Image (cartoon, rainbow, N blue to C red; front, top):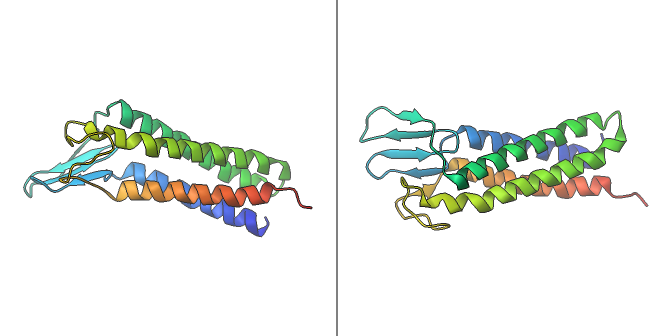
Length: 167
């Protein structure tokens, strides 16, 4: 595996792990008004005035369901890219396919990043599309997801260099 392929593979792997962690943690939107509220795509948690934290699967509105589907699709594409980069040690022709799967992951993540803020209208937040009220803020899960998106873009740039014809 040459240097650019190794860099691209490492970055894609990091992006995949960050995206998966962002899905697991319930900290997409957080608030500490009236207790601690942590809203996530797979689970949400509430602790009212110092009581024990209660976690439950959220009832996602359409926007956040589409976001979840896009992120899962992006994770599948990134995982496929990582696997194809490993396979490229024995079959160099799969690098082009890896690049296209990486591009598809980037598109999926960008789509999720655009759709997610439309869901700020959910009843427990009470905001407007793309306008989070001052009582709520984005949490670490959303930051991990955006970081994953940026790393995927950078990884795709490195993958593009790998697939360029050598003159």
